[in-house]
Length: 221
Image (cartoon, helix red, strand yellow):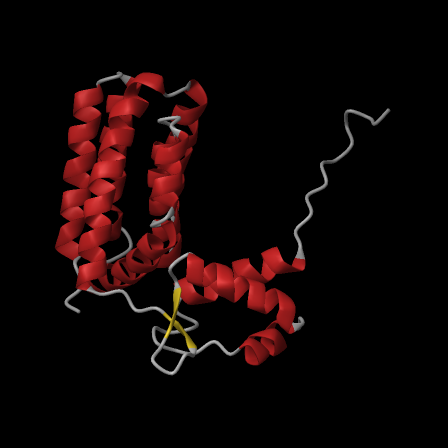
């Protein structure tokens, strides 16, 4: 019988690690928009064979972060104003529904996790960290609705949303400061307060207002 104090073993395959690293490089701008990602060069830079790189590139294209250009080459996808508008529209409907449902079915664990996220967001020190935690808040809010297919639908826009958000936070931090870029903290806090008080209508209204304000960050192209 195993000891109750035995450490948990977490295994990460090479493919998982390659996927995570390539995704990080895309989101952080190490691979700029429109840049090509040749299998051989990616494999060499990561010190792995081409097989896990090929698998990762396929998944990243499914995630919406890569696309094939007119030459058939795999390139980092560029997100413009139309992408921003469409993602905002989808989020308004999905997250509005999630906020309304979550206000009545959320658990104490859901509330705790969202509180932790807000605290971490307020302590963040880089645009990339702000974007990751901002996306995580909305992901966890959707999870708090405990609707499987709602969460699945939201995951379809998860990575493009983060890619756009990283760029927006970078631009905003450059124009203002890290502190000024944390305006989402107050919005997230008010949404969470409505969930705690189980005010479904208010939670949905605040969430929709929050996403609508995101429209002010719409890229010009």
